[in-house]
Length: 323
Image (tube, rainbow, N blue to C red; front, top):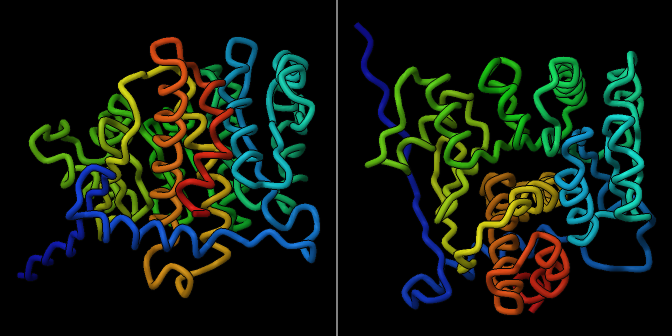
């Protein structure tokens, strides 16, 4: 009879600007985020600070991939690519001339077309505006597989999470993946992996167990507080945001996470003081999104939208990580 394995140590940290006793801890984790941010210098060339790919965007959903892609640029990526359907491409191009838009996601050779670009990308975000069309979902699955083969960090959000809940083996064990479920998406994933409903009295334990079941992937459960776990530790981000829950906030999170995951992965454990780089990246992205939410809400209140939050990325980033 084998002995039961002891559970991993859970380090829980809660950060809020209004809790003085946690200010030191908060500053410590923010310093790890600052450590992985590449300095601005004239010696670097275009592309070195991040080439991010967003896989998503169909006729019904053009805003989500735009918000993710433009946020990646505003956080500091040099280039932002959107791989979307033909119907969505012209619309997304019209939102911003800064984005590189590929109208290939519904083409017969979609996977081949995206695969050609993967060696040039530092991370991919799968899911914003993807929709539930079966052909698009199948193409997204194949793109996940191709990205894994190349060892690229993968952020999975929105309908990308629907794919994983239907076929968890697609991402299970790939520790360069970060999943960003909201409450409903988390419940769906949890039940698919653990065959039990979420225990509402043990949120921290649930996010820890889901990460473990997925092979110690980084899981970011979005909510009133964001719970982040790699199956060994749980970080709690309760940085002040606002009570406004307009659509698109999760797309800002996934886009910023695409950049920060690349920076943290490149920097490695030495710059993150031995912490999992993807945990550090996730905490940074959660804090940044909440800061954007807070600043935009101060200006616009109930009328705040995701576009208002995008406009705050630069000042929010500077306030959190550069002062």
